[in-house]
Amino acid sequence: MRKTFYVITFFAVALSVFLNVLSITRPDWLYAHPPDIFHAKTVIRYGLLERCERQIIDFPGPGEKGRIRYSEYSCTPFPSRKDDQCEEDNRMFCTLWWSAGYSAELGVVFGAAGLLAVIIGISTRSRRRRVWRGVAGMQALHAAFKIVTFGIITHLYSRSRHPYFEFARPSTAYILNTLSWLCDIFVIIGVLTTGLSADAGHAWAAGNRAYRPIEG
Image (cartoon, rainbow, N blue to C red; front, side, top):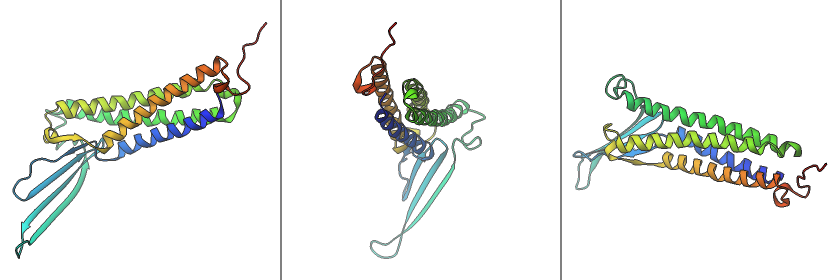
């Protein structure tokens, strides 16, 4: 494979890993806005690692349009063994949510391994002939673990009876995860197409010195 293809692949894989890391660290896989109660508004964001809640209460104040606003924002680990009853009724829910987080983190490991494989491929021409298979394999695992995370969270928010999930909808981190594994799929298709074409001796993929079988 040409070095140019490896350079393009490096940036594509780096983007995919970056999006995955962002989706893990952001507390907004799901966004929930339960119905307002009197003058109180509550917004809850659920991430793979924590749950963040903002409460806004408006009190009538002096004057025609006067009001006093109280706002509080706090984040706690999610799911919590105590608050979310992980040792009792919600054991399966908590186990699946934690598994989604672990799966996304494992994806980062294989994404980093894919980046390392690309760097090795860039280093010498002889390695470029072989290492594309490893790059495709690492990216396939990177995508697979993220798709597992995506599937678990989608299932839980659409089927779970967890409080407030009936008001939840996918948010930013959910979208970032989706973009990340879609990016992986395009990378895998591109690497396999280019690598197989290079092995077949096509100059556009292998370069001016296309790979030729030794006749004898």
